[in-house]
Length: 449
Image 1: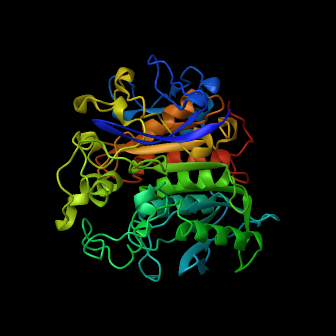
Image 2: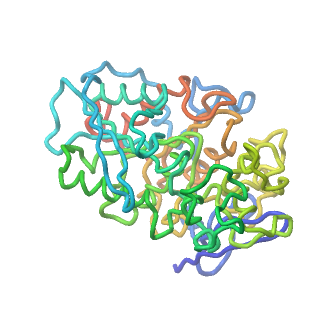
């Protein structure tokens, strides 16, 4: 069927971008609302609460769920003994993003044979800023995942940002994609530290659908260099996975979408998103609702970053719905109207879901261009009451996987009032990667349906 991109805005809740198929109809309120073209592949919610991870009803903050019981088994296994060394030299490389030379880093396993087709690898969307090679901000938990991956024969590739806390992942609206600059000429209306890289504005709003997206060009050039075996790169594009937290999680979702376009973007064997979810999260609607600021730059700062729009002396005005609920204070993802009760923010009320606020993952799947049989398995990890993200980002993405034929993945709460990876989630995270990446000791070629 033919699918269209439709934008709704109804007071008091403005929608995110909504792909719908011809013959616009929505699902029954007996279940969560998905894009109408996904109704054909909808299945009863397929989800198993993994044993040993808490009781879903009494302690929801302790639960882990998977779409298949066999995935639960993979998460809980003991980590296999190291078969390689993690002490290999890190390669500090550069790649063009079309404007700048960007650092990226590659570490190979040592003490074990290199596969003929190249090493399987894990790509981590890192936090170093370009041109600041000394500013290694990978973080303790990601260092541990890097070490564990290398010990299992999986190489590690880390990218860098062009500006602090910035990757191009959003689908930006017309205003954000325009060449318009805020009235003071420096786009500082809500960002007192955004000059000069916020100009043009799409660089501040992280627009992946801009033809000038620096990050998309960076990835294209990295994968082309891997394919051509340049710069000493010996990696297997057919055996890779993504991992990212916060904005890196949304960039992981964007990279799944890029894979649907084909060369040079690889199809990952799996992906891990921590403290984040769909790249549709934090998207500013094209049209404001009646309760939103009339100034597009002000309101889109709220949609892009929630209450952080007013941090560090910035002033984007008072919170408006949906950001006036505590679980939405850092921004929202598609499906946020499912959770109307701030005292039980994790509990869905399908009768409250706004018709324009359907659950989304990536556009190729939202529009049914691709089936979920073709979607990589995803582990969604989030601390309970995340300290810097929409609290149901992981849950909302997982609810789509659980309801679509072929959808595979897990949702795990790990940590409380944190942001990003924490020690409690380490074993499950590395086991999920090992279960899907060829070449690792535990990989069995399992097909989970």
